[in-house]
Length: 148
Image (cartoon, rainbow, N blue to C red; front, side, top):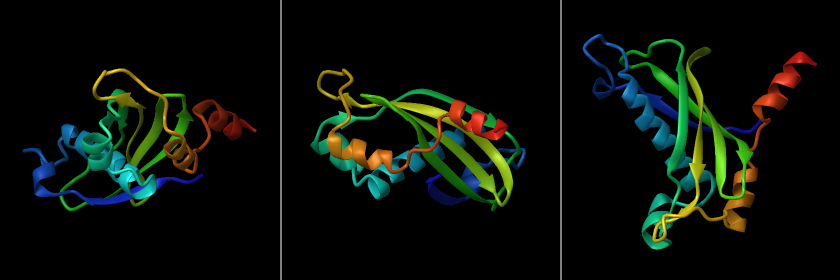
């Protein structure tokens, strides 16, 4: 399944007094992943989307499971794929690994909206077509595949 990836080194600014990555920092890195996916994979930079076209993709839902703590100078690979593409929203599956070790997994739901009205709007055809290139199996399809 295709997934978009970002490599991230855990920096001093990411860790807390216990020497492990402070969990809110993960959310900033998840947002970086989404922003890079839009710019690099979908050819829709946040500058163009928000400032020029006056559209936004706010996060409507996010859930994350933390598996193993990350420490200073760990090399993480963040990845995402589209689990579900609705008319004006999408569900993304996200993960972060350090080598073969899972650090986090989860999902987020983005909503495509008009910034002037604050209301959701359908994905434009070009953006929808680009997003479909990153679709993987839904969680129900994935779990059925595991049992087959």
